[in-house]
Length: 85
Image (cartoon, rainbow, N blue to C red; front, side):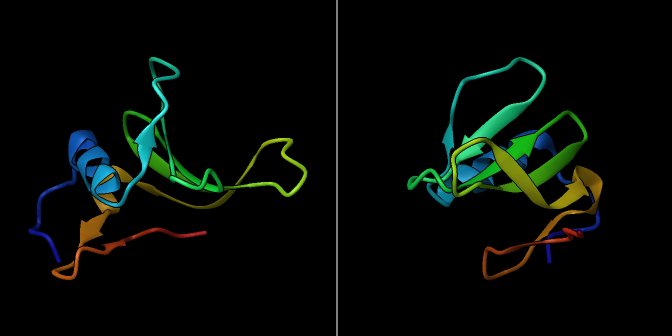
């Protein structure tokens, strides 16, 4: 896993972009990064990240996992860890 220091917001955004998530450019406090197929997203605030999926009837997003940025780690395989329900 990544070193002992906290993950920064920009580090997480860079990781998401490397996984083909697209910054929607909406919002000033929270950033929403949406997958290329539009079914998954990360909502990134100043201190936390939420992993969400689109509802089947397109009425909104449902949170599946969340974590504080300080708790997230990137493995040597490039996977992010530290999320909880």
